[in-house]
Image 1 (spheres, one colour):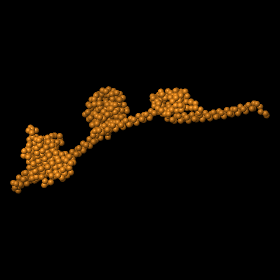
Image 2 (image 1 turned 135 degrees about the vertical axis):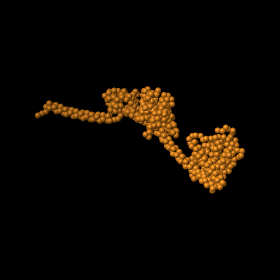
Image 3 (image 1 turned 180 degrees about the vertical axis):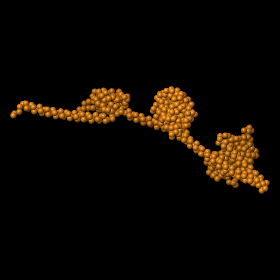
Image 4 (image 1 turned 120 degrees about the vertical axis):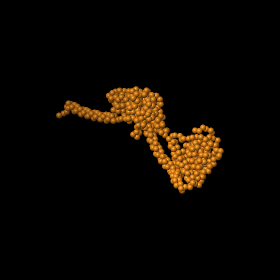
Length: 564
């Protein structure tokens, strides 16, 4: 059957419908691809930590990501449609044409700007932007990429604060190290601390429950007066100071009411509007507290308290180390004193054995009168007298040492003293045991001295010369007058002394290494110096190793003074 016109028209319609279906399919595919791309684009925008803002050609916001919502504090639907220029503080380009005015290439490098945030106020950002163009170069909008700098600034601020605290710690260490005892630096520490953190400061040290020392800066005003009343008694039970010490916690009030019991139950001192009490604790010991205060509310802020807490730890350990050193020193002093006492008693008992043995032996001999000739009895009496005098000197020396150590003056009876008589008496005391060569002029003027004490001094010096020189060598005792004084010298031909031994010759208990096998207490020269100086004189020594020593006593001449 031949084709009709109707058939031909139907075929063309079917073909057109098929082509239309194919176009529709391609359009659906394109829409699907665009939706997929859009979803991927949204996913990328949402994952970015930087805030991304897409702006159309007139300068209105078209798209934003979640980071932009967080940065501005505004929801996405409130941002879309608003002017991009409203995001920034004045001065940053907000439209494509503003960008072109700044850069013909249409791209601005990263620069610092400020974004207006609803909930955070001005937020510092690093922002860069670029124009959006079609393939043929037509400008259709712009894109902003913004990075929040507030966290960076916070970290930088914390770093600066940490650096500042370390610097303050170092300066505080220098202050505490200026004195042998860091507690002597506390006044300077309070002044420095007050100026560094712009508050007034005080250190309150305690000994158990009692306040034993208060140091404050400035050293005036109502706070200083109230602090001064704390010394020597426990802190008020209801005060912030007492609470801080008992509970070992920081008490902080950035706004102080008049009834706030900072230091006492009576309330805050006049002029205190903010304050903090920081306990000083080291090695589990409560040493006291650091008190800071200011005249305005907020002067003692949380930041100030954080700094003060760090510095309080350094102060506490310095005070603890000082107390530990003091305790160790006291312990060493006790041990040294005990050792001195043992050596003194040992030396005194050893020195007393010889005269006591002689006295007892002489008494035993005298009891056998039928066997003792008159000459022998005379010699025994003389020996007993010498040993008794020696024993008396040892006892007197020990008593003098005890008086000096107790801080009491030695007993003296100053008057006109004939040095010749004293020297001869010393010679008679030593008898024939050692040759004493005397060189004392008959016309020697009298000295102004205590004759018994001078006898004691010369006996000590002669005894020392006898101990440290060979038995077959003499000891010289000479005296001469000068315009204002009388000089008496005792010279031996013994072992002598080194420069180091000379420097310590008159120290109590000092005995040279060469005196180990020679009896003595190490007090003779020390007591001699004390007695001579008490009489207004001096005693000195010159010596050379292997050649002997010369001790010289210088006393004032008698000028008609009344007896002391």
